[in-house]
Length: 302
Image (cartoon, rainbow, N blue to C red; front, side, top):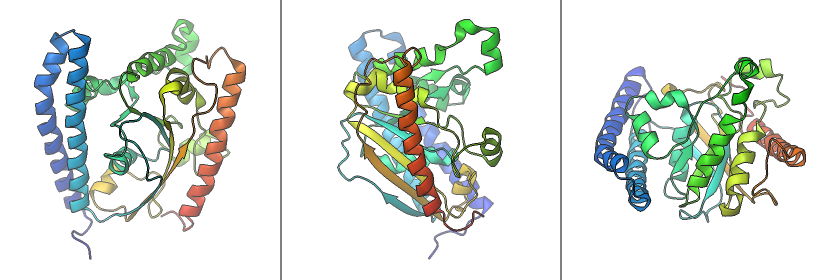
């Protein structure tokens, strides 16, 4: 029996509750952020980061509770039961929409360390969230178009240098680093323009994963490969649909994969053998994921 009927009004109420929850926790962030900003002692800053991460975990818990109360999605989750909240993981996933982040935070809450992901530099200006992401040491990356790099070749590889820098920082304490390998959210137009060989996925990009593995491979407990499917919604399922209660089923399958051998310290740009090995490894994972999505969404997309 449904608690609430799916509707735009339900979406507005859920959005306002999530917004209030966000403002509340960011308000608690501010004093700690100020202390972190003015005190340069590394040990003190590290403790500030731990406090902020604890606050962020509670923010995620409250958001999950709001969605559980307000919407009626059926969660079909399957994965390993022996995950360690004190170990470090690399999380890789297909990317359908912003709803994916909510799904990942929900299914991994209290099971692994707080999820951190790479953000476009422009997102630092998002009200409240940009400040929180900065304080939580989320890495902000400046992405350049191919045309821009052709005019400014000296900037080529700068995003990868940023990846390496932040991964070194992540070694200080357990962390979960998430990477959406497709590099962007799925859409039918992108799928067509890429001429993707996969039925349900965009072409994977191995570079970001390779740099994380090269920088952190010796400190990771494993790789969590996540496949997310919204079988009753169009492939471009939106966060707004989730808030409105219009995503009937959410399917997530999680595999714990071993860290590939001999990756620590490798140079993805300069080492052609390593680059080829990483591309083959990612493509094998994507082939399995593509078949899994086809099985999970055997009914026609609506």
